[in-house]
Length: 536
Image (cartoon, rainbow, N blue to C red):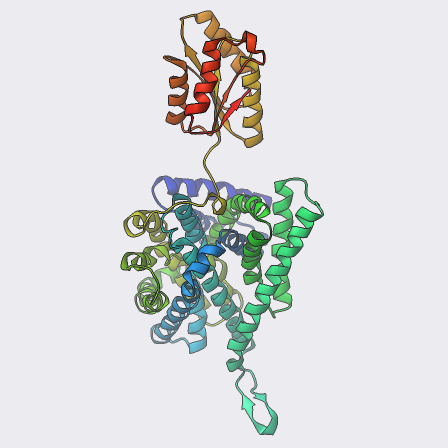
């Protein structure tokens, strides 16, 4: 199993990066690697890995839903009223229904099997949509009207609704024809009619479970301080989320996936600093989970069936998108403050499919549902067609269709690197400036630029400062720069040109030893800098 894990993580990572450099989503490279490693081609994966594929897919979906919950903004959602709620229900249900009806004619499925296919294909991809919408939030596109948040919430909610429908239908189809429920006075009831009531109960209890889990995490991690660092925070949160999903399997009275997503949302309300730490940690976990999810998806694909289903599969996707989902989008945004360009953005921004299809596509076949091979092939086709288009279309059309607004820094994850500018001279204080810069860079995993403004050419002096810099910043990625010019203007210009996080500059502790020129340097930098300045 160790060799198979190395194949999955190693080849999956490099294939994903190769696809990214070609302009395609990394998941396409990962799926292709899965096909090569799987039993259809190379047969390099051990049976133990393939047997555990369902559990690994479940963990991957749990991680991406936690990311979605931690990325929501309650204030923006409140501004949207019922738009996010409608986006989470109407497009998904109408697309699933359209696909179910089309599959009855194209594949001769019965209606329940068609709905099972519809629940898989209609689900939106957190792997594409969540990173895409969070990136738009960081850049400010559509944030004024809360469009990324509405799409995030609608996407997560629609996936939860469809996952509920999928699980209920899968259980129903596994059990075969059930006996009618006998009611008092000789009346009977078809058990299929209970499915909507079961879904409502699972949604309500899932939200309650998510709130209780969030309260538990805040108590463990903040009030009782069971963890000592952010890694342990993420570990405990992941364990609690996994327990919620597993418990939902054993006690199918609540939605484990909805509990995970709502847990992330409630964590923001209960303890925003903790939520921020967990948000960064789950971003890191997703790097590994994404590789495992899509490589295993590729390994499950049956190429013969995929080839046979190409034209019918594309027809199914077109029917679901152009009829079901389009009508759903129209109804969802009716009466909202969105203009026609913002409504049109739903086409590129809200139609990608990948994560749920990868997690669920193989399950009907694994459980012996008739038509499982066809369902898996169409799920794979949906990923290969819509995921690249969605990943390309979101950043391409957002600037054309959405308005740019002010970014709230408390509601986004900052991925920019931390870079410090250390302004040094030939005085004894240069060593303290370098030490402080090194300490800041180590604490924040940042980098440094050491700037020495030359007023008089002295190669030996420059060599000495450079050697001192190398000694103090030996374990920090840094650059040593010398430049001629006026000291304050040069420091400010370099800080803007390199977009530094902060400037570190020295000041003599003894006013009598501090010349007018030295005093004017740090005062001038303080007065003119656009970024924080640390005076040592």
